[in-house]
Image 1 (cartoon, rainbow, N blue to C red):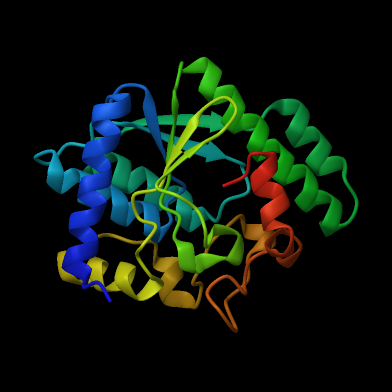
Image 2: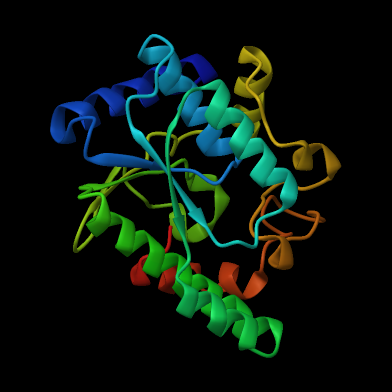
Length: 223
């Protein structure tokens, strides 16, 4: 079993490989204020002398917790991020607000996220996204690779080998900022209408229709 220090070293190795393959200008870090990608960003910050050289893309559903918007603004200022905010289209937002029932709203919101991700690829001429997903989060991510080619971009997963415990150990060890929502009982945080405090495993508070369909959603373009 790898130690935390060994996992950090491996993450840095993946980051160096990513830089060599794709450069620093054409990859965006996908970040919504969650603990995992914030941890990844801190590792990058340490590697590059206090600078995050990547663009940071915030896929704004307009449905995030107020605490998350405040946290994102705070960290973006504190770490001097090159933050790109890709808000959901007016059409997608209108469809969401017209929809009746949470199941339909969830489906529209998921598709709107994928639309935003694809729009950002074209708008910012990106080759791909760097994500803070972990293998232990969901069975659909268990067999994921560090470099995961998609039809129109690459996805890079430097934090794959970390566990939830590793992330929190890293946060405490290096005093990494995190959203106050985690101290209120949320272990995995999505949009406010679809997120509850966790009562079982890490993602038990997330929209369960999505969790059950994760493999299909990932084929469609979801993380």
